[in-house]
Amino acid sequence: MIYLITVYGDPVLRKITTDIDQNDEGLNVLVNDMFETMHNAEGVGLAAPQIGLLSRVFVVDLSPLGDEEPLLKDFKKAFVNPYIIEKEGDKVLMDEGCLSIPGLREDVLRFSTIRIKYFDENWKAYDEVYTGFTARVLQHEYDHLDGIMFVDYCSPLKKRLLKGKLLDITKGNVSTSYRIKLPRG
Ligand SMILES: [Zn+2]
Image 1: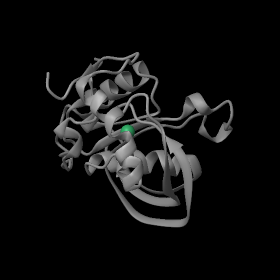
Image 2: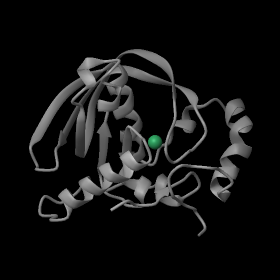
Image 3: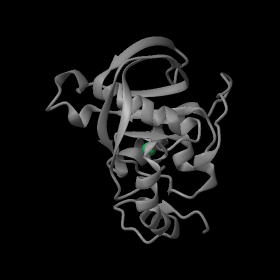
């Protein structure tokens, strides 16, 4: 099932998510739906608040980038109840986009290396270290679980410059190839 994607201005994107219960029988269906919704929107990552749910889960599929970076060829994963327990290395600047902030890209400083503990959709536990582009995507999606969006990292001046565009998104004055849920509608 393809969900509508929530956009900037929706309060659900500003809330803290809660851990998923291990007895939750809907997890596999939810993860499948999140992959389907993300693929439909041609995204590489999607977090539960982006489909209006306050559950601590995000999905990432970097396999479309496998042509340029062979290591990413099979990277398709769900991160259930993830916790980043270490961030280290230099901070790296790179531009990011977000399915919930369509049409806008800005540079964001992120740590180059993270250590993250999480479960997959079958409750297998992991404790892994990621670097580079993968670490960036994971930090971006992880932020969504804590109500943080990438534009929050922009300077006060940049934020003022973006205000009009963000307001347009909130009002639905934006074109997307996927269906969005407007904050007030
Ligand atoms: Zn995002």
